[in-house]
Image (cartoon, rainbow, N blue to C red; front, top):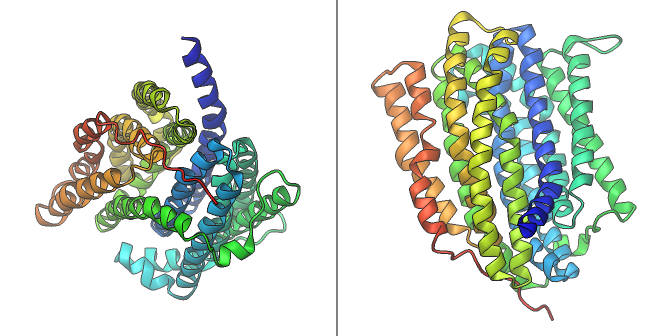
Length: 450
């Protein structure tokens, strides 16, 4: 029992700052929705749909940072800091490259992007303004997120949490000042929310650079970032990152399709779905933090060849994830009356929101279990392919086709379509648990560096 106590203490030391950071990030989205909702429902719906681009970008940098965590956690646990820092350089290269692509695309083609998500001309116009203004944030996010990933690996999770949290506070304050034009600030409406995001990302990047200059975290080797001679390490990075990237894009693309489906069911459906998703994301912060912490702890054990301990620890974390998921579902049910009271939507949207919150409450139980195993335990030992297959098949073969048929062929009610779109986490649980019990993830993937 003493072992478990020290284990959970170690987990809480990593999870608390990571989960807090996820929560604070969700608060920005919540403040956007809350403040823009005061303007009008169209602004709320447009920012929600335009925000899907940031979500899609997060799938890319999320995979790159996942790849960093898989390799760097084991090398850092082993004591090979030089190789772990080289993994950071490789990660930064791709994170910045994709960030630049997203920045240029949203700056030059915002209307065309919005037309993918909705046919409503008002939403397209408002969303395009938001995307053009927010475009620079993608490049800045690519830089800061790669560093936040490295900070978590090298026991600086609290530092990344402090920087991220301060950035969120600045973002929320600037949201209010720029959306409504408080004091000498101009009233910019939906563009104000976008500018606030960019300014917060600039602050975040400056703070990361200061932390590096003060040697609070590893420095970035620009020469290695541009060209790495360690071909074997580069090959290993892509070996574990490509399945994660396909998994992220496959899963995220499916989730984005949810927004596309809802976007074509009207503004009421979009508004209700965006509020329910924000609440679910805020409550799920702890689940995602646990997945990140589990990956780092077990990855370190495997890097030190503590294979039997890692196997035993995995079981403890699986049980913990079920309890956390259940508790999270109860919290969602408890806050539903408050959300319905404070969020003012059209009567039909309010009706949708009430039942979407109920769906979020049971969805999060499956999400907690699956994220801990697929995003934490499996990648810690380099087992990234199963999660890829599982997520992509579940979404693209089962749930998305069912949702599209329900919405566009059978013309089912909005809530029936929403219910179909919450089935993915439960469809894959049997396959996930069966694969977990094979223990293919219990493996040391580090190599001796010359």
